[in-house]
Image 1 (spheres, rainbow, N blue to C red):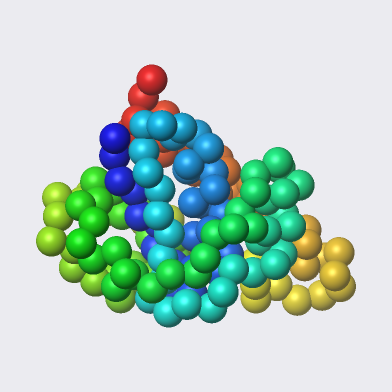
Image 2 (image 1 turned 90 degrees about the vertical axis):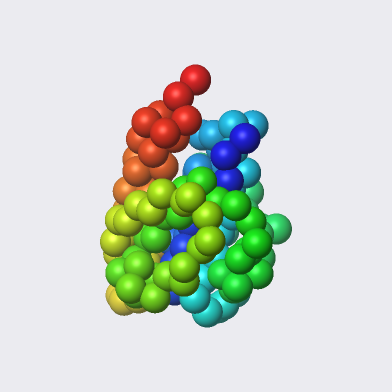
Length: 139
């Protein structure tokens, strides 16, 4: 079983969404963790937008990357430039990957427009996550 860490700035939106999709697509082939350089709590809109796609992340917690320093990760995926630039060194063989997804928490406009941005970013992350698992953890 592979260990995958998804890393973001606050572990509230993008990394939580990626965590949900990566775990769904990987099944029992991987244990997925998510963390942040800081912890901001799981964004309620991220929980809502994932529930719309039948994935429950409501029990996820916002964790600091330091909590996982002793886990031998195989893959570390940064989902924002800030996390990539500030990602700590892990004393493992972890391969690093990066994709700078837009931050839906910074969306402005009406409530509907903000949720549309969450959905747009969710779909980007879903596509990336499915491809990542297909390439790195083939059946």
